[in-house]
Length: 86
Image (tube, rainbow, N blue to C red):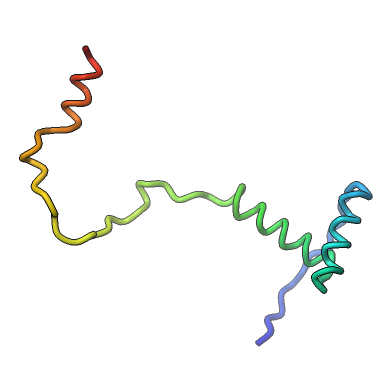
């Protein structure tokens, strides 16, 4: 299955050394240099520009039954706060 994706041609300036490295890698892996650059841009977008999910956005997850009754051990947060105040 092929999808027709509209591509926007762009012009970028890179050092000769960087471009040669991309070309060599592309040749070694039977790919085009522009394909590698598109993937690098997509990777940058995914890792640096797209909104990251906040913990507040996550839905609760059930992990099954409670293994040990937490009320028998006291309030751990209270213990930690009390130890911190000393």
